[in-house]
Amino acid sequence: MNGGEVIGLLGMLLLVSAWVPQTWETVKTRKCPLNMKFIVIYVTAATLLTIYSWIIGDWIFFTLNFLSAFQSAINLAVKLMEK
Image (cartoon, rainbow, N blue to C red; front, side, top):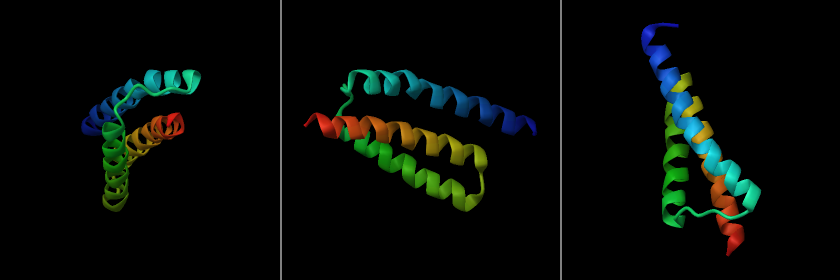
């Protein structure tokens, strides 16, 4: 693993870990305080970036976007069940 990959891995871990407390709170309370438009845009963007990173073969970028899309999708599902 080269220096660039280490920096990318650390960035990925920080970004993904930022979503963990919100997602955990959403699952526990079954309420999502996030704005619906934000969640839809975020899930869509993260999904598209996941596909892109798969195509270019960047595993760090792929993992980051896949986990971000997954956690955001959980928040979106809970938000949709609220209505």
